[in-house]
Length: 299
Image (tube, rainbow, N blue to C red):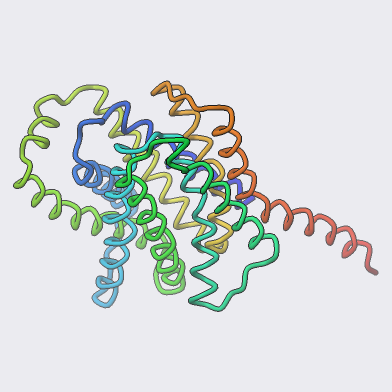
């Protein structure tokens, strides 16, 4: 059941790329990050007010900087420089990074299924992102790797905090503090390139408002509430494998909103990456379903 719930935030996150290009294409990434984080954090604070204790501010600031400030900025760089489908599919590589991170840091060896699926994901991604078959922005690809790293490190911190403070406080204040960090960065960027910020304000439209509402309320307030709550109930690797909905949403929203089209071979590689990301969870589910009847029949 948790894996199905994990698909809800992943689905909304997968629409970020197409929604941004469709409704906010000329906006600076730092400003988009601020307007995604702060309204969502304030909304959650209004729903259930919380305040960190003196010893909690530092770790929440660290989490907000990694999980929100850096991640949101990188996600919007991806959204503005890479095709929506490619961004969504690329993010299914998170399980590979999660496996490697926990193998190195916590000495948690991957299962055979996880190792096989990770190797297959790397091979398929190598073929999909081959410069000879598709032209992709180096900046966008670098942002993708950075965003994946933020997910793994930020998720580890989030999960470790679950035993120290309430998940709602973690959720609310990482958004607020991350949004404040981004506000400082955006302010500095606005001094360097003021015309981009002025253009966003002077040409604000209903389409812009709808796009911002989508990423702030559904992608962030709802998506991150489920994300933090689920990380107290399942492993980071398992949560990462629930990310199948991310590329599906990226492909569908890119097709519907932006008219993105790829070759049959490219769609096949995307499908292969999605299936490989699901394989370990499917095998675990099959194993559990076989064990239960045996346990039930035991006197």
